[in-house]
Image 1 (cartoon, helix red, strand yellow):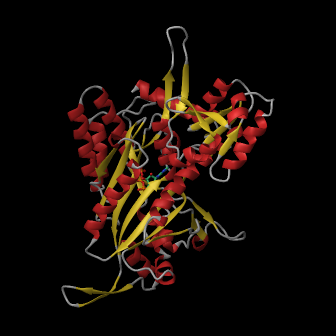
Image 2: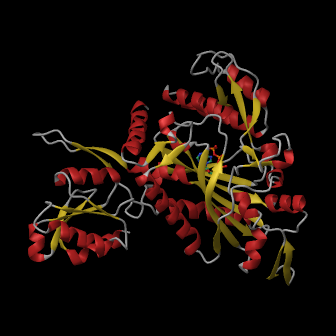
Image 3: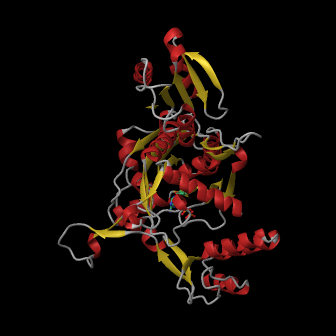
Length: 488
Ligand code: ATP
């Protein structure tokens, strides 16, 4: 565990040192659980987005994308249940005044039990917690905490308040002259992107002439006033989601739920991250809208945690919007129902949702890629920091180095840059020894570096160096583009 904590700290430092992630408004000491992506981080994040977007829209026959606004009519959140139900049970320690999410407090205790070799007891506590959460039994949860003498990490005492619900939505007001008391002017920063898809269901279905089953995908910001905001970009107050709502005929939800569960896991594995880093976690406590739900968990440096949720949302959302907006949210299905020999007719579609946090995916990718590699030989100690990123996600694909700043080598290197930069992102550098330049590119995850030397002038070949193996080979300049493109 100590090692994993050190590794996590090393990843966070690496992200800062190499321009991947900075604390937000750092010159003012940062803002809790808000982060900025730097020059490398924004490229990596964009590449993850593009990879998801392409596989969820372009490569599908029946899924289209939208980009809805962050602000939505306030009634949206009444209809969706977020005003009444988007709460987390919280408990405060009276001595330290520290507030905990109840499930986090109990989970941390169970982790301690596991670390002490008490696996069975740890599982028992989690099972008891899940049963109680499923029934919203707060008195029972408090008793569970007291019976196990679960302590506050700061005060070390068991002096707890009652458990209370806390709504996670941020709100603000529209217009400049209204009073903040005026409930009609209260708008929320969306806590999920899904509702932007639901309220546009008929717009897209009609204008796109979409036939059920079909999906609508969206990538965008979401905001949650998380109480226990910690663990770097794992739990942020402003984050991005990549969601897809798949509209289906009622009664077919089980089969589509299983299909999307499998499809999404395949997507993760297609990035070359080993299967054992992922597992499913089926929900016992279902959200108010779901008839089945599971998480795809990833083994982050702090253990297995939720990366993506797959939810069978029934017709809950569309039905609610129909009721609150008084506008029909129905679809006419003219396919023939074999049971009756007649068209299926009008219905409100059921929905399967796949919802993944872009920032969590970023953390999964970078934490898996990061390695402190020992390269020592009996003669000399040596090491390097390297990001084994999949080439298609790497911020820079090819770095081009002239061996020296003279003899026409920079001109050839620039020519290579100009040939390649329209296809993929390249980086040019002529400062410092070649070894040092390689190491900097390793730390950014650049899969290929080429060095232009004096032999290049004679035979138009360069040395290409592969990041992971550090092997070098001589190839023709004319081959470079193909080599890099093949890896993408
Ligand atoms: P958790 O239980 O970790 O709070 P959740 O079950 O509330 O997550 P969902 O509402 O299912 O999360 O949201 C879908 C996805 O959005 C999650 O799987 C996660 O990847 C991402 N996500 C949710 N909350 C945050 C957050 N505060 N910061 C970063 N990503 C988040």
